[in-house]
Image (cartoon, rainbow, N blue to C red; front, top):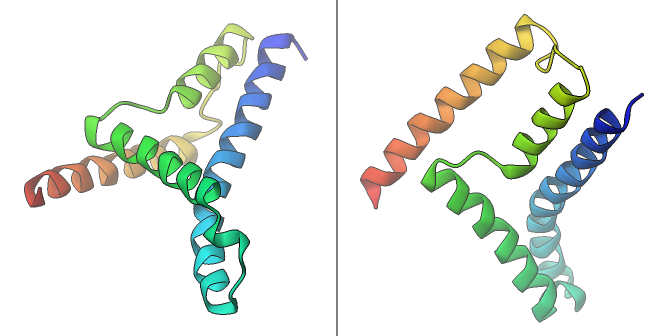
Length: 112
C-alpha cells in the first residue's frame, strides 16, 4: 500500500469519527438529560458538538462538498486507486444521495 492510500484511509477514519461523534452525541445528550448525567451538560462538550453540527449545516446550505471527502478522493486517485466509487451500485446510491441533498437544500432555502 502506498502512502497516498494510507493517508486516505486515515482521513476516512477521522471522517467516520467526526460523523459518529455528531450523530451519537444527540441521543447521549437526551439520555443524559433524562438520567441526570453531569458530563452531557458540560459547556465545552456542548459547544464543540454545536460547532461540529454548524460546520455540516454551513457546508450543506452553501453547497460545498466536505473537504475531507475531496481530500480523500484526491489522495486515492493520486495513489492509483482509479475506481474511487467501487462499483456501479455505489455510484448509483451516491448520485441518488446527492440528488436528495440538493432537493433538501432547495426546500430548506425556500423555508428560510
